[in-house]
Structures are given as structure tokens and as C-alpha cells.
Figure (cartoon, rainbow, N blue to C red):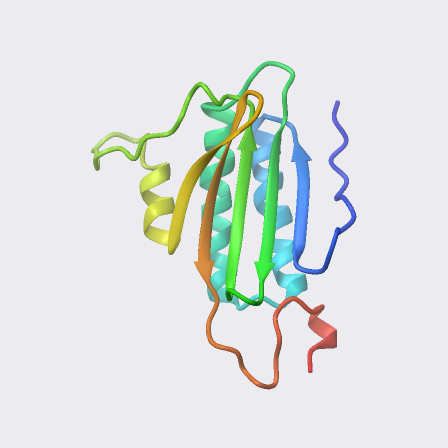
Length: 157
């Protein structure tokens, strides 16, 4: 079994975690993202959007990007200079690039449509040697002079 203990931050406002390519791993990705964003003091409206985006991208990594014995990676970056939250999910199947489907009546195939609706920008990039990264960005609201994102909730100005 793979260890899923959170990795130490390389810098404030950055999070990266390797997760098992299972339904449990996808659920854990969503829970970790929400916990991290709340710790950073990200507004609830952005956290809720990010939660849905992570859920869809992690589910895609598990169901469409899974390679036997390979995990997927969740990455979150809070960029104060561009005022954006970037969500990245990297899986092992670079040979299966996603395509935005047309709206359908079926019960599946709507994940990327939801991501496109919730994110301000999204895309996919190759992840050499054999994977891909799906990313989505949400813009942060204008700064409140009394609060700054990216600082722990108890240490705001």
C-alpha cells in the first residue's frame, strides 16, 4: 500500500501529494485539497469550486489515466502575483489525452464539461516520459486590505 501522508511544503501556497489511482485516492485528493485551501485562508466560494474541480480531475485520473502500479499526483499552487489558484492532476497515461465532449444525456462523460464551467482556464500538457497533467485555474477575488491569502488562517494581517 502506498503512503499518503502529506508532503512538506516547498513554499507557502504550494502543495503536492502522490495518491493511489483508486476511488479512495480520488476521494482523498478532494479532502486534502479542501483542508489545504482552508488552511491557506482561501475564500469558501473558491474552495467550493476547487473541490469540484479536484473531484473531477482526480476521478478522470483514476478512471481514464490509470496505469497498473502507477499513482497520480495532486498539485495546488496559490499564486499571489497572478491572483490565481492552480490545480494540477498528473496521471500516467499520456497516450490518452482528454477531449472536451459535447453535452450528453448519459450519466458519464461530463467531468471536463464541469471543469470547463467551474474554472477560469484549463488545459492539458504532456508530462514526460509517459504521462499528462490536466490543470485548471480559478481567479482569486480582489485583495481585502485586512486579509492576505496564502498565510495560515490565524496569521492574517
